[in-house]
Length: 220
Image (tube, rainbow, N blue to C red):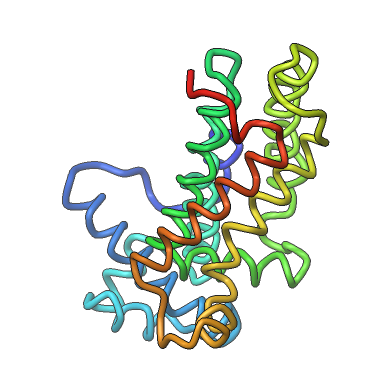
């Protein structure tokens, strides 16, 4: 999966701590600008201003706006999908799924703009990253689905559809980033804080594990 993501243009070959720090700074600035202006409305000048670097430096790391946009999408997928490593035959289903849900919620709290950029890309039909979704993401989820089916066949969890379980987890966790304005409006707060995310996380863990027949299972 990560090999496929590496084919999404990110930047010139990394080399050294300073380069990595600068690329990370630019990516976070780009997340912020793309999340608010979209790809069409964002400019390299705005991103450079947000990152606090000269525009010429921005072009040194990312030659075009499209390359930078794809880098944001690829980085977001890498963050999300690296957390699926826990879903393996070496782990008990309750521990694996709980840790995965908690990790996805932490990323919604720490990288909300990245999640919004990704959601907007999907709403527009995934023109930049569609091939990665249809090939590498499809393959990865199929692998994890086989693990979940093995747990089900072994009587370790309730019979659920593995694919739709992933869709449910993604929707439930990413809504706190993608639709935080709606969540905040209903809760009557200006923004979600650490306590809000903690309560939401505990709710989702209990709800989803119960649906998988794992809520009462002991941690392995």
